[in-house]
Amino acid sequence: MDPRDEHVEIIQREMTAFARRARAAAARMHPELSLVSFTLLAHLEDEQGCRAADLAAHYLLDKSTVSRQVAALESLGYVERRPDPADHRSHVLHLTAAGLRTLAQVTGRRRTAFHERLADWDPEDLRRFADYLLRYNDSGAAQQE
Image (tube, rainbow, N blue to C red; front, side, top):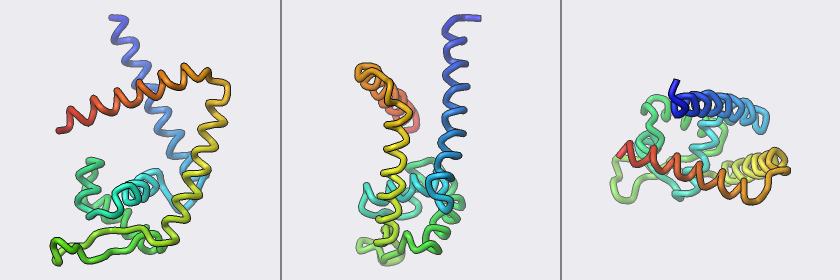
């Protein structure tokens, strides 16, 4: 096997394990928020609101998946729909005060968990790891365009 193939296999396996741990950790951080729900809330905060179709396009999710997630977040009182000022036929999703509080709490817990897990990492290793993740995600975003 080509050494490059071997490394790619290890990366794929470890990223799958990372994703599984991330989903499990999300459930422990807040039992009502899946990793997808947390990600959608964070995006709504970053964008100061957006349409459900924009969420689906950004995360390459099926519209029905986003619709179910948004409905669950609305029922929890974390998200509300407001008329789109640019197009009154559609709605923009915004975080409620409860959604902002919950997102802040979960974000704080996640940050603490990452700090604990990476506590014995050298600062230069952290910088390199962050750079590699940015590079990997940027290359994926470029391929989707």
